[in-house]
Length: 113
Image (tube, rainbow, N blue to C red; front, top):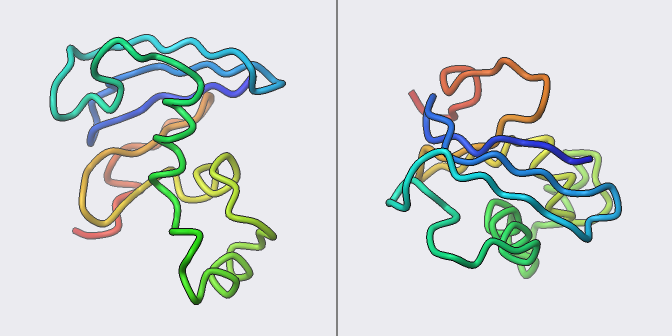
């Protein structure tokens, strides 16, 4: 199982569980549809989760992607692996991913203070 909680700063907004074979997904919204809920609306599919994870990666077309992946010890721009390393933290928002068993807080993962 691939379990994580989507966070907005220190607020849990959704729990996501994905089967080992990446074919089944369960999304439990913990916050109503709003600007901090990445899974607003009724489309709660595996494709939606994948698009969310992919949006938190570098673009596949980046000229320096190979160097970035090399620094992260990755051979491909795999959203599952990339988000495991980065917790999905982006420069321009406060949404991130906390994986099952972690006790991290926003203060532990944020890039800018």
